[in-house]
Image 1 (cartoon, rainbow, N blue to C red):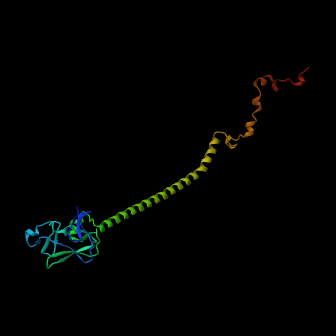
Image 2 (image 1 turned 135 degrees about the horizontal axis):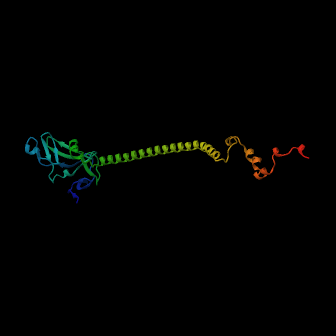
Image 3 (image 1 turned 180 degrees about the horizontal axis):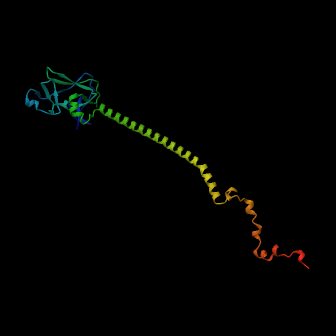
Length: 239
């Protein structure tokens, strides 16, 4: 459940990265929001230098604030690459104040930039979930989809042109084969004797076939009864 801080312009509530700090009243630019606090660690001491957690806030080379204590409400403020607040560090007093760098409306999540070192070590490996990074990823995905669609359309257009060229090539090939097929058909008919020319019949034309040899048409019996010229008597030998 969201936790409201009495007389404070913020509350702890659910965010897309877990818990976060949200404005409950308008916060003007430059206004102090909350203090980041906790035990002070001396990095010159091995015991303090050995402490490891995600809530360590380094003030200087020597001093670091351990903000892991639950009373530190500022520990719930999440990182953003384009934040609406910032950390104001007073090295001499060893204090960290979170201030608004723009007007914040009720319901808006309060966030600030954790810094390059923290980002590289903790956020980059898992991917930053702030609104700015989410928008970048969304834009990249949209651009990738558009590029994929463009390449697909290009390939389809190329394939269509190739198919058209192949169809035209096949059509030309078929049209070139038609005259040769007709000539071949005529030669085949000539070989079957249906449309042979006078030359193809060894010099015998239609007239020769239409008028058969008359001698061959006379029956053999008639030829036998007819006396030959050599067997006739001469007229002077008759009495």
